[in-house]
Length: 405
Image 1 (cartoon, rainbow, N blue to C red):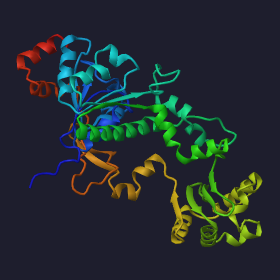
Image 2: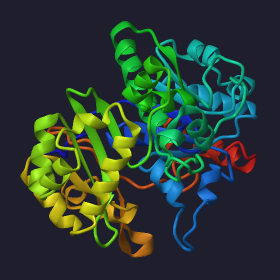
Image 3: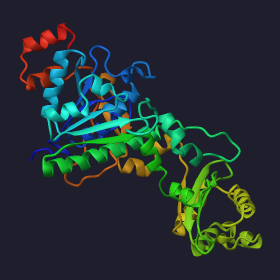
Image 4: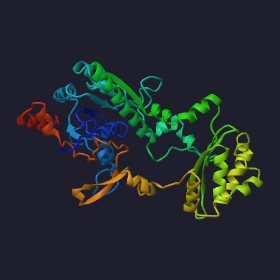
């Protein structure tokens, strides 16, 4: 019996992309079986190859974002390099680039030029600000999109400075949206024979990530209350998501909505009588009073500080309340549910003589499982890919000597 293919087996992708938002969409496609050819600059390659912080190991940045793809080096300023790219695009279904706005057109691989080569082509363009607007021509980064898109406030603490986070949420959100947009456009192209350009941006993805919280802010025309608690709903049906530390300073979170779950949760914790005496038997009282909200959270801080996190979480879960420990990044990589589902896994790195932990896959396909690969060496696939286009060994050697590849 042959080994099952991923669900994107047969999809061919060419990507002139760097950084994170520009590479993750195609890494995900490679995980799922697509053939992804990454175009890199001869000799130096993608700049992120050199961003490693562990001596003797590959760049964690490059490895995470480019696993499973093929590497072909092309000098796109050379006539022969542009010709090779056009041949690759002619046989591809998806093309991606995230160069500074205008650079793709300047270097011969803008949408209008490539659609003449392949009318069925799905062309993914990722920018910082989006294709329109006063700053459309500016370059963008993850921090810029976090700053403009609202997440700095969403995770802020009252009285402290707003700041962007260390996890590249803008890059990753944009990448996942680009992945979905590409497959949506591919479905249309396969049905109609007509390709199209799909524009995604770091800023647009970050705004989408704000979800219903942004809608509420817009409709109420005021910023949300931030900090340790998220309060939602109405006085009749209040909702609360809040975090607290236990006696050892270990944090946990729980979330509930409605009067009955509130009473059930606080009873299971042994807090209800104390809360009722303080006027908080009904959670709805905090909906219209900042003073009441602050007083309740302060009292809960004191109550949670009397016991252990594991016990509090177990009691809440026993009462059918959503609750969890708040993990550090390292704790998250060892969480039993993360490991059981393969969201973090291990793969063999023979050159280092060991297995290393890596991202698994966020999907489980019953018939076409994902396959986790490693990132390619620079230009590792030059010979095989160019030979597949009909170039001879002598031609490939000549390209290398003249630094076309």
